[in-house]
Image (cartoon, rainbow, N blue to C red; front, top):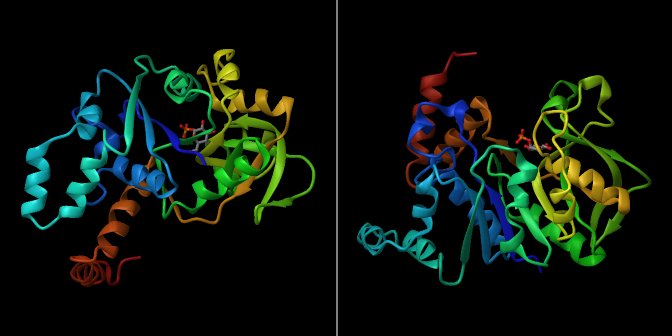
Length: 293
Ligand code: G1P
């Protein structure tokens, strides 16, 4: 079982300014819940009971969100929203929350390296909070591959050529095979944000990883890559050279809220699906958009 999830949340969120001037982008609401809560729900649904949040001292609200607050819990209870209160009460009780600090923006590889002491010697998930998944099945699948083989696994999705330069792209080697009922394939090469013509495949890394702790040595040895930052992708490439890593092609619903269109889609999807207000919202939306292209 993988029970620890590392969530890097130290970024400055400059694309969402001025909304993120005061509120960290991870705490902007998708519905009543901040985006980060949706990531935590996905993790907990996969059996995680230890969250390692990488944050920055300039974003104290992230820590505050996980701190016990009996007045907030009582207020939720009074509104008949006891399950939301129960969810908040779990932090610091049956769900341990550790914080590590990345005060300089030196890249995703540096951020994950900051989690070393909190993670210890066990396999762990990395969950990039810019990507929302519709359920926990992808994490569960990645964990099964690591448990069955002892080797790290990375979630992938086939992307159109025009999008490849926004992602880490892997180079598969060898045949697909089945591990614990999942189709996986080994990869060795992996390149961060290649130019379209240099991309080794159309298989992009989508922000979910199940990694073994030896990756921390590769993270510690990183030097700034082509982008000038310490890249998790470069550490994966170093680790895969010792033994190929697993790619798992994901079919799960996914929204990239790191871009303006994706953010709007996530907010509207939550509104459309809302059990209480969804029906009225759908009526309003279809009237509002009737006749628009
Ligand atoms: C990061 C990773 C990249 C991965 C992407 C998924 O990039 O570095 O390899 O494909 O997340 O969203 P970022 O989006 O943080 O620039």
